[in-house]
Amino acid sequence: MRKADVAEALLSLVGSPERARSFVGDLMEERGHGVLWFWRSVTRLWLAMLGRDVMTAPATMAIGCTIAWFVYMLFSAVLALIGYVVVTLAWGIAYVLNNHTGLELLTDLMRVRFDRRRFLTWRSIRFKPWPCSRSLHFKSAAAARGAGEGMR
Image (tube, rainbow, N blue to C red; front, side, top):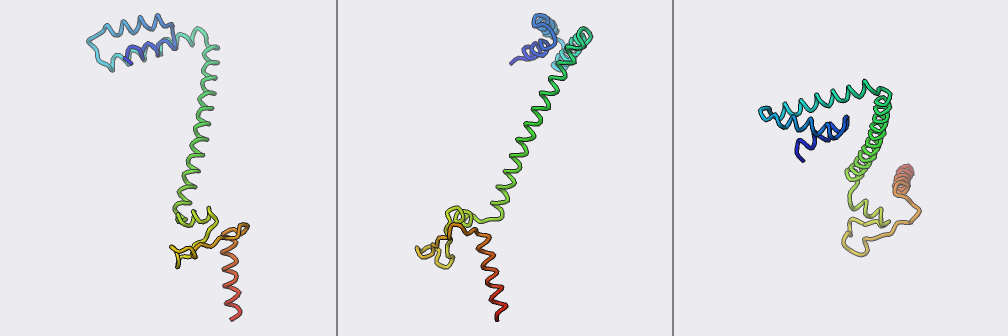
């Protein structure tokens, strides 16, 4: 997209498209100046046309600005919510992958326990009882060890 098309689109937001086209045509005819001068002139024209609209119809401009602000805030809130969900999921995935081994996660998913001494044999696979969770299993084992030490 040429810079003239972008400038026309910007000026058409605050004025008529015919007027924007004539202003941009006049600016393009000034060949002796650089790109910075062109965009500075477009910005000045845009601000002047916006100021003219504010002076002629202040209520319409205030309503337009209020609607634009609400749309901006709604868009920002949606982006913040998406960012919160993404960061929470990324943290959760990183936490699980950092604190658990792949084999442990896989066996918990399949409800299978492997005996590490006989890892590659069929006898190494033992199925866990379904209702028993891993944390209860470890607590009962720790309680059994603690009870056994007290009896000695």
